[in-house]
Length: 215
Image 1: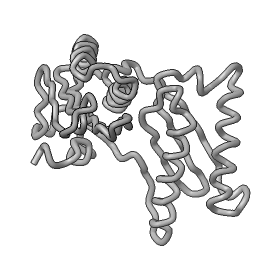
Image 2 (image 1 turned 120 degrees about the horizontal axis):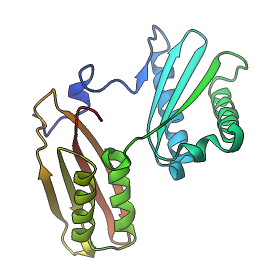
Image 3 (image 1 turned 90 degrees about the horizontal axis):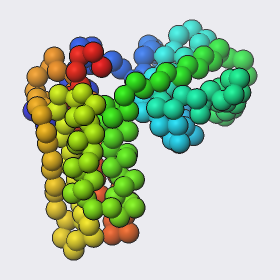
């Protein structure tokens, strides 16, 4: 079952936590859709800063947004101007959703990612960008696995599926190094998938990384 369930889902409350943390009695659907749209808008706005995860916490009249990025300086800006612009952007976004002003207090935090090569989302995105630039798939896989293992990972698995290299028939390529025990709940496994839109169609990129405990 470890290969059929998202590794983060079966480890919630053990080695991973929920991306959205709040309780809603009657507005569950509204809050869920708002979180989805808010996360999507932020991922698009902060993509150049290497955003990986966005956590949203809600309490009474308070929304706390925490973004984990590889380049926090690009988000904060000189003297914190970038952070203020981001806050205005989020306030306008939430106003369009709720159509009410001063309904809540908005708290934005930017956290740096200590080692981008151990972040599954950033690794998958980097692989997809290289495939779009038509770099050889095997060379991309080999180089990525070496970088991840060199950063201290206990194991890494990368799977590509689709018309790799523009082939007429879609296929699946896999490269693994180290140990990636998906069924061992106590292991800190991070997973991400990212689509690469090439001229011949989509190539799916999936990455599993077994991170050490201190990471």
